[in-house]
Image (tube, rainbow, N blue to C red; front, top):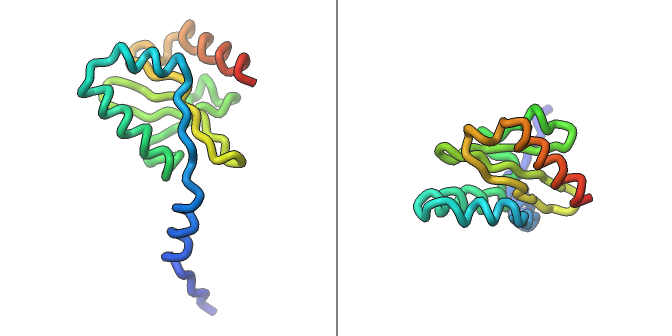
Length: 118
C-alpha cells in the first residue's frame, strides 16, 4: 500500500522553522582579517545555514566530535560551527585558513572557547 506525501507542505513547514545564525566573537575577528571578496563568499555560505544547517559537504570535525562541531569549506577557509536543533540556532565558532584549522593549538583554543560558552 503506497502512502502519498504532500512535499509542498513539508517544504513550507521547514521554511517556518529557519535557524537563527550567530557568529561568535572569535569568528567575527577572523572575518575582519579576510579580504572582501572572500569575506563575502564566506558570509553568503554562512547565511545558507539558516535554511540548511548541515549542507552537503559539511562534516563533523573528527578532533571536535565530542563537542559536535561541524565544518564546511569556502575556498581555502574552513567554517566551524555548532547546531542546536532544539533551539533552532547555529553558532559559527571559528573561521580559519585550512592550514591552521587542524593545528592542535587551534583545536585546543576552540575547545577552551566552547567550554567557556556553556
